[in-house]
Amino acid sequence: MAYALFCEDAKISKAYPTEADVWKHAAENELVVDVVTDDEHAPKRILDNGYTIRPCPPDRAEQHAPGATDLKIAVGS
Image (cartoon, rainbow, N blue to C red):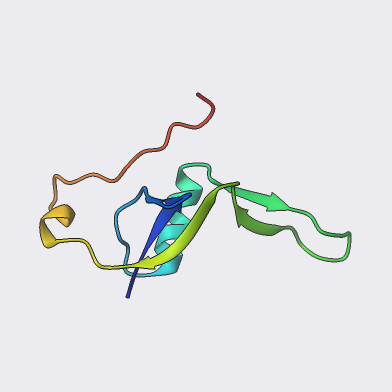
């Protein structure tokens, strides 16, 4: 099973083999925020508003060719 990053219902990243890979991609694009719930627990990492990680079909092989790129999300534009 593959996973991808979605905004609303639109798939905005390539399919990654693991959910952890999508979290890494989201963090690299500054889409992960730390939320403090109380003083006793460490901050919880969540996706920014509107973003989710969902299972999806794997991408076609040519989308993972050496020259293929993933979406880069402009933050703060």
